[in-house]
Amino acid sequence: MRNFSWTYFTLSGDVESFLLYKEVGETEPGDAQPGEADEEDAAAERE
Image (tube, rainbow, N blue to C red; front, side, top):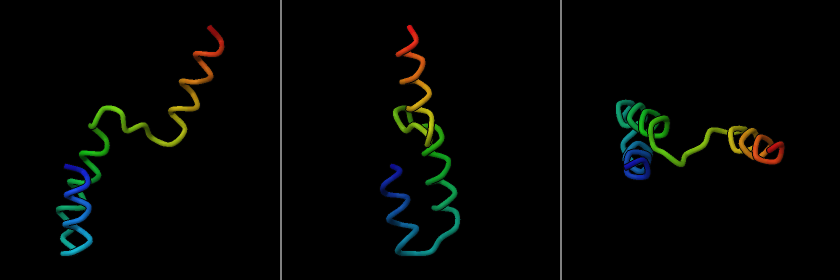
């Protein structure tokens, strides 16, 4: 879904599709924000 909304945005320039792209990116599991993976790795190393 995220890929589709980005592609649609780039082809159409529709702001609503960009907002959907951002929203889906915030809610999809496995899409770590920059820096989150580093924090998880550091926590795993401390254990």
